[in-house]
Amino acid sequence: MSFSMIRPVLVQLFKKPFTNKFPVKYTPKSTTKLLEAVGEGKAQIIPPVETPPGFRGKIQYDKEKCTGCRLCIRVCPSNAIEFKPKEKKIKIYLARCTFCSQCNDVCPVKCLSMSNEFLLADTDKYSKDMIVE
Amino acid sequence: MTEKTTYRLPIGPIHPALKEPVQFEFEIDGERIVDVDVSLGHVHRSIEWAGTRRNPIQNLYLAERICGICSYCHPVAFSLAVENALDIQVPDRGEYLRVIQGELERMCSHMLWAGVAAHEVGFDTVLYLTWQMREKLLDLTEYLTGNRVTKAITMIGGVRRDITKDMVPKIQETLDYFKENFEKIRHTYLDDKTFKMRCQGVGVLTYDDAIKLCAVGPTTRASGVKKDVRVDQPYFAYSDLDIDYITPDILTGEIHGDVYDRIIQRLLEVKQAIDLMEQCLDKMPSGDIVAEPKPAKLLAMLKKAEGEGIGRHEAPRGEVIHYVKLVSGEENAYTWKVRAPTYNNILPWIPMLKGEQIADIPIVAASTDPCMSCTNRVAVVDRDNKYILNKEELHQMSVEKTRRLLK
Image (cartoon, rainbow over all chains, first blue to last red; front, side, top):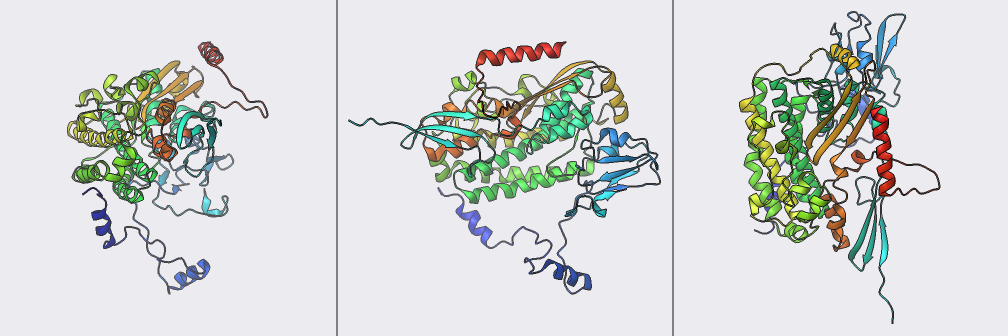
């Protein structure tokens, strides 16, 4: 057959779409109302596709363990980590973070780790959710 | 008597048909292209400048962001250069893992290109079919490295993540999927009437032109030039593997150097990549994956190091070269020079496009798999004056820069 795509296209017509309809199947009229409804348990959100093991998501910081050695600041490619000299602890700006996890590798006490949380959109890059300390 | 004249057709720097900023000036006679001029330099990002203000470990992630599709080959070429300068020996297992990552990226990139090529000839159904298959590769990339695109897998002296025994079945599963479906893609691309009509005999790059204009990668190999860094000067574990030059005559028995041959070339390279990955999984020895597991120690080594190094890697688009100069007492690199493969594949556009029709511009331009943003290294900015530097002036400037670096 000279038109080789006809068969795959016809087969595709009867297949379920691959796309995961996250977070809801249709765009809601009002996002705030939808979120309220989800909060009250009236509506449900379709969960996102699961992340594989070893996924690099939002960084997590164990403040107690940190010794303030500043090695993570030296290797961070985007200068997302700030040192707080008084407390000798660090502050990570997620808006700048590139999720390379180089700081996790270099940390001598392993106080940094990557979670699988990836929904980090925010309108304010200095909001509470976007700063890890 | 009226004289028939040609007219000029500028396309770009910003144009709906172009994915990235590049400017073409066509000399058109009716529908036929008489002459082409290409001008670059619209997306200079000062990456090399930024690179000399960061230490080499930070630079790995900056190099990764030179190109979104080649997010493995740039950092790996950079670390090859640093390893060359520091004389670091990568452990055997690390070398094999680097081959696996490199070939996985080649598959991803060629499948992406195949989809784009289908889109450029106006055959979007095949674009979706190809990218549906590519999704499997992206899932595998995410599984092996942690993210889909920016892999962050390279480390100076090895790789950052190992492939354990329980990860092998998933890799094998994906490779088997591609082996089973290879015939399907081959049939879709190579037997289809639409593709044959649009691609055969279009955008021809002859063997002589390919050599004269120093084309690299699949672009040059599709014209029959046997040029491949993996075979010419084996690095990583390529010397232990069964690898040979791929040219389109393996499948068809003849070389035309047209767009159709470039499609064949890339499909064959996908097949070769599957084979190489399987060989690696078979032969991979056990042991360390990185020469220096402590980045802090590596930074101390880099501070003491003095010297220069070159890293060459056969990226999906061709040979990528990184040059690094380190001076003792400084953690940051003194100089960093990147030559992306597209740089060599720009001039071959001119013989390819001459004599073609306007409607063939997108597919011919896309057939070298151009990546304009990766290529831009020089920008001369002066508000109203237009600079045109000729060959002698450029040569003089390059001599001056080399002397400055040698000081």
